[in-house]
Image (cartoon, rainbow, N blue to C red; front, side):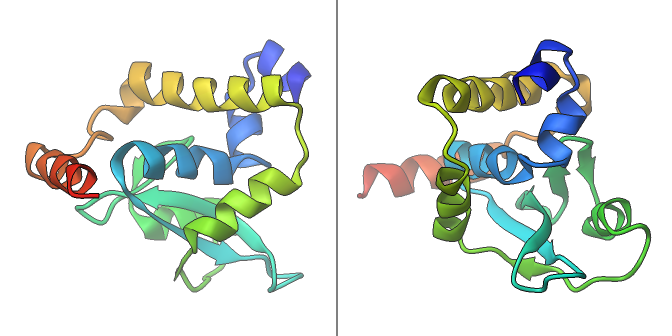
Length: 141
């Protein structure tokens, strides 16, 4: 993982192993749901997950796309059922990796930086209406 980061192979990092973390960062920042598809060989495992904006578009390391396209890219163009993913399950899967704290922090920061600076994520941030709902929700806790 550190080699992939050093080589700036961010798609390898977040499409092949850390898609959970990428989606969770978007959930934690803006409250997006996480959707995914199950692994064909082991239906108890997730094959790929992504965050879902309020307009229904999915966000993963490749950018902002329809969920249909995300499924096709992740599943060799074979159909798969999209399911809502439990946030606590995502947190548990990330924790189970057992990464050292510094690597985990680096991956979180890297995911945030990619979304905040790469042009393919223009439009990833919630709309003003959605931001207001998040602010109100957080202040009412």
